[in-house]
Image (cartoon, rainbow, N blue to C red):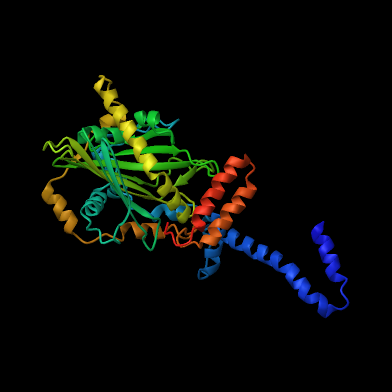
Length: 429
């Protein structure tokens, strides 16, 4: 009502020239609000809008009616984002499918083409080569920037981050656990049944396929996200190699058409989380190799702006590390009590042996530092880039989000807290 009264007073001026400056001052905040809304809407535009923009900017071609239908924006363009190497059926004998409503299927070796065999190698030697280069820092990527260094009485932790030109931020961490053998650590990471007990972010874990010969697994995870995001679904291919007393554990997102996409939980396609595990000398100074070193390399595109994701990782990193340590100590007691090995942990015992000479050869072959970045480039046409978003827009997005969610003061306080952290100038996220 006050705005209407103010506008009427301006319009009652003696002539147009006297009214015009006051009218412009009156309208200026409204135009700023409109412009701000457009900018925030552009940052948070939905996936279909990005696809429509890309379709308008591409060169026109002669399409048939089938091509037009197939060009409707979907997630199919993400199929090329990670190399899919599938384990050969000739090594499997039978394919165990744990998805609901599907029975076990066996395929005779003679009925499989070479292409079929290649496609079933979800996690292959190229993945081993990549993680070995990451461990030895020979991947040719950007330098790692230190983020954190913390320790407790039985664990020490260091973390680094780097921001590639294409794709989400990448993280590297080194954790040393005292009084932990590498084999127990390997089983702990693989044991989805026990993870459901200690990881409150994991809602579901299901094994879809597994190979009894090389230990390759395909699993489905559903992880819980904050209240303003839908939960996330992951289809993960994973496999372990052993070289000497070092374990190379690869887990990554894969394409798996047998599990259709749903609106909720949202599927995360770009996911990479792999680590090496080996015994190291304890910091007790007794000369015993009783500690376990874990080098973790992780990145994923969760479908939210990367600057906000970086802030969340930075704020929650140490808490997550301590939670993993608590879960590990619980797992140690659980196994020491004589509890049977779960099926997932048993699969961690089936791994591929690789000689140190072969590993060195892979490390020194053609550099694949752009492998991940090239894969992520396929996401650009469907997922808005979260890098280098101006802080003003992020703050505005948080404010707009808070104003549109009616879930009480606590919800809005959390969002405004994130906005305030972004508003601190001079602090690099």
